[in-house]
Image 1 (tube, rainbow, N blue to C red):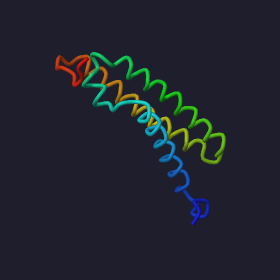
Image 2: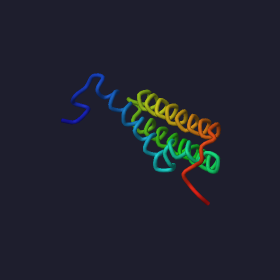
Image 3: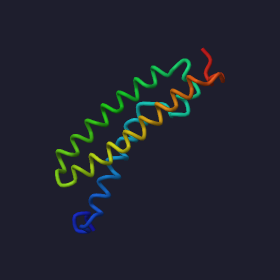
Image 4: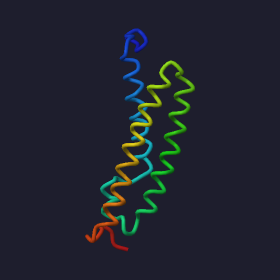
Length: 110
């Protein structure tokens, strides 16, 4: 059964989840994990955050295009994208701060 035939709030919930998933996937495709960011913040924090920022730009483009294509669900798409973006940026920001505050050695050697 097509989603349009189901009707109701399922359409908006699906759009929200898909938009959020796209943001997570785009950032994950561009970055190491927050754990790696934390463990190696002393040597790679700036580089890792550069890729998080570039991933956020890419995610914003995808969310924007999706909103233009699917105007009926644009607010759910925006909500899902923003929610995932805030969570992911927060995770990486916390990982960077925690790693820089830690005196433990990283996992990489140069």
